[in-house]
Image (cartoon, rainbow, N blue to C red; front, side, top):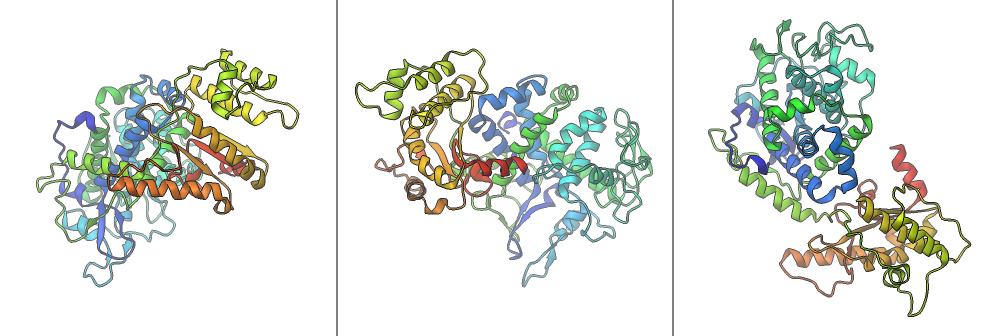
Length: 515
């Protein structure tokens, strides 16, 4: 977003009329789709610059062809993740608005802006907005001359942003179900089934067929080129979808040259999974109405765009900065890899008394992590009581610093052993050096009875107390967290797996892996 701050961004009245968030039935507030797109793009930028580890970036950067494009790609997909909401079937979803004339849904805003709604099917059974967005992005990228396999590798990040990749049958139905009453195919000639003839679903080099009456706003002509425009009710929706995708490109700085470069590099599945994870995080954060508040429903929509449609990028960025500060996301674990000899290191990290020496096994693990050229996995076997935990934490710190990793997960067999070791992990975190300007280190105890762990709950209370004082501009110097905090946002069954340091029963790790 910052890369184009000097440019003028204009959105049509139709694009500004679409909603992304409502107040869940109260009928008092809403959030325009373009604002939510800008919020998510801003969070994507912040996650890349402040939270993602160097190791993750090294995986993503080669996939984009030119390393610098990886951040641009992530920001674009974050901005575009909800493009599937720019459809008549989503905009007409019922929204309760007690006591208001507009009660029923928010589609009246789009209608007043000139968008038409034909007879729509019930939303029951219609693939949701993630799959709709996937198909819309596929169509858009195909119109730019992208090959089918490349198109789908990128669009899948939109289809999966609610936590799972669509299965083949869902994708086939979304692309080709032109005989259904809610038909929204982008290719009327792709009826062969799951095999999908390469020249049919998205066409070759951007041309494809469509079917009339799409609930997702495809054009109503039977066949067109990617550059043509036949107008009509559905054509209006497709124009708005394209306009919003162009808006996402402008926010993220994805110009024509960058788009052409990306078209040469399909996203490998492991990279796509990482990108989806970032998009999901950005969506979660941008959907937090405590930090990204809704707008009053009856207020003139001029806070972020004037009557002519000129978008106020500075206001949107200010909104994002305020939200990011309120989220209080600890940065990625970063440490300059300057490690002393083993004796001095273990004394400083684990409080060894004067004259105490590390166990030979600890010294060997530390030296191996520090000196090995390419070490991916270390197994430590030693008798009980010899200090395997300290050796493992030492190796984790050294390897993380050398390889640019973002944190450590301490996984143990049971909740009892996890609780027993949490205090030792906490003390180790307290003694870790913190690079200037990088803030605190985040920690989480991830099991069902964490609320009964007094040390962890003490950290939770102190972290929240420190943040409350920080909100009023007071630095709580006597806070007992000592550089370790429990993030309010990275808390709970799913998000609790994201902090810098995680103590968890290994069964919990298996649950995350299975999800």
